[in-house]
Length: 367
Ligand code: ATP
Ligand code: MG
Image (cartoon, rainbow, N blue to C red; front, side, top):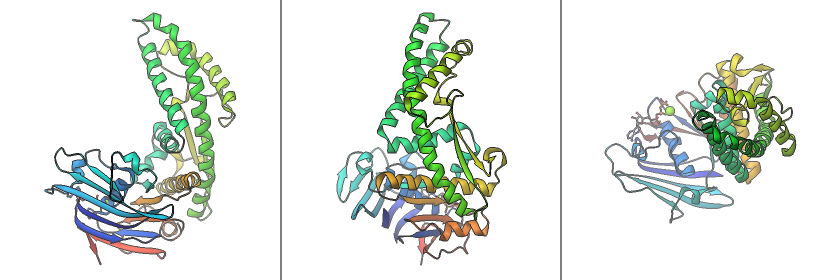
């Protein structure tokens, strides 16, 4: 999958912009606030039909302009197609087109241009709380496995209802009779969630560890371990087995849930631990190591997406070079050899040997 060219009119700080891209690495260089991230945002918008930095479409339209237009030629599954999006100031809804044909929803563009984005906030995945790590797994799996998305949705609904029943225990004690039923269904959907996440994480670990080893010059071994409730010894065991273990955990926490009025049992608290050479990253990883692992995870996500869909998504790396030593910078610039990659950076002297350098100043291309 790759983007052959892009044109922007009135998007963010771009008045009128046109560029052809390299099938390999595209290094976007410029000083702060010149439009590097905006360019990646435009590509992302055409890929997903939504922006990654804002929900407000009006922010994407250049100040003072009536509309913004984004247009790209994309090559995927052996054919070339045009993606076009037009956003209007005011209330008129945005329009999406695929090779000139108007499309009603962004779902109609699915699979034309897939992107994997790394932005500085992705570093939080390894540093912050478990919710960020669950989100990483859930986002990927919801795209790849419709059955997983359905299980997750049902689990979340059951969890919210169970939480309400526990919370209102004093006012509506008769509702407690429903809990066994909720627990049963939460163990069923929970077992699908645990096993699907754990198996995906194992695949992710396999690939991320290989990328991380190459990235760090072979000095660091990355491991990822799924963590769920204590009774589940092997989260990759068959669903029926994990279901039984989840039931056991529910039973042993039944009293505690009634006392604390909280849902204490189930995969809604699951996590995974990332470690380097056996040391948990959250506590011990340096900034460069955290960045290296976060990028390796993205590369692995991209590999798994390719294994599932047959096409390698376009990789968008925003501001990744800072904090990396020269060997690791060289990995990013010259050694991601499969598929198309966009890398933004402020370091004016950086070049790539396997692609092209695009210099941006104040929303314009410097030739
Ligand atoms: P950095 O190196 O600091 O990350 P960058 O090159 O990635 O910088 P961008 O985030 O792409 O910078 O661009 C930021 C600039 O775009 C800001 O100066 C901002 O004011 C401008 N900008 C954002 N939205 C609009 C808009 N709707 N109209 C005009 N300019 C805008
Ligand atoms: Mg930026």
